[in-house]
Image 1 (cartoon, rainbow, N blue to C red):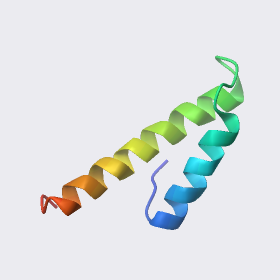
Image 2 (image 1 turned 180 degrees about the vertical axis):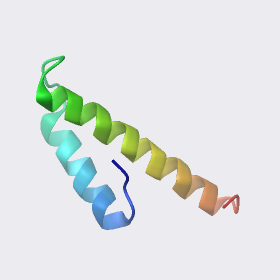
Image 3 (image 1 turned 60 degrees about the horizontal axis):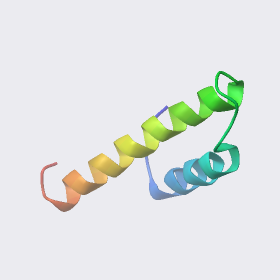
Length: 54
């Protein structure tokens, strides 16, 4: 999963909030882990852009 813009970032964040605390190993937990990875990658890229590293 890749987040490409602010709108997708907001949707992913909202969904992560909805399913936060999902039972370990459940489909929602797997989805949450993927969302969190994508959110972190987007945030890391955004910080790099702000620092002029991109």
